[in-house]
Image 1 (cartoon, rainbow, N blue to C red):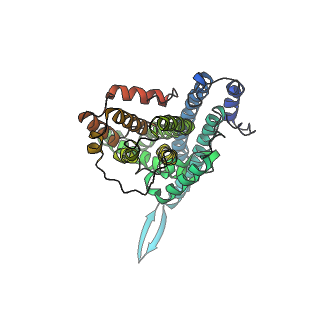
Image 2 (cartoon, rainbow, N blue to C red; image 1 turned 135 degrees about the horizontal axis):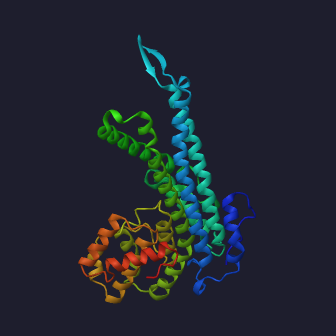
Image 3 (cartoon, rainbow, N blue to C red; image 1 turned 60 degrees about the vertical axis):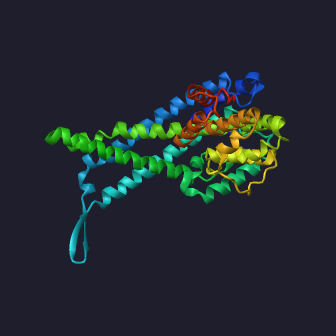
Length: 369
């Protein structure tokens, strides 16, 4: 049912994964569902998360130490450079700035290597990518094309997958953006420290106070990347099985089929072509139900929903809930649309049930709608 992982055991995270890989290859998935993580896969992913987040946090702390430590030890190397411009002389910290760029460059590359190794370990132990999806290469190519057209939207959801040969610039931009957040958080922290400590706020204190801030943001970024990798492992087969089941029941129903894209448009899934899971769901539905993706949608989904039989309405409800949860993240817009459906009596799932289903899916227990 799946391809064997590459024969490459270099690196600490490969050793972590390969320790359990043989057991995983010989272990049957619960209920024989490849999109449900078994106990071995859970154990490997949990350990990978702990180690990755710990090392990422330590890199954040080390970055602060290596940035400011040499400036305290060898201050003569970081003196300001005098530059003349239009007859005026300006003192600029060029050496400090260049050294800071070098530290950031090294830290970003170390974070890249750390997270890509972690992702590779997760995909190895989960037998990903699968080899039995006839549309797999097509989906990936279309996803890449869509991402290039919407680069300002989501950096191809970080572009993290080493097996899919997707560009790494998405991950680089994600880390750089994350460091900008860390810098802004550190500036805020420094301002507050100076405000409350006054003359006792020595430079060494305010500089080193940034260590937990950078550690937090590095760990936060790594957590999101690993979570994205887990979704990429689970989403393709989860989507295929769900769409197959939906097609078996409603594939020839003339009241259900025209409302599929209307439902996806209502919860904004069609607007997120850069989103891996949403794009895959849309393409699979269009392909399986033989839908025309160029049809002009009415945008009046609630009115259309009120005019169909209850059985059709319940299946559209399943599709909507599945669509908003399959990417592992329930956005504010999606929450608002679900509340509108509930207010109009078109949603039987409570907010508590949806949160439980989302939590089970993110923990690798499958998306059961």
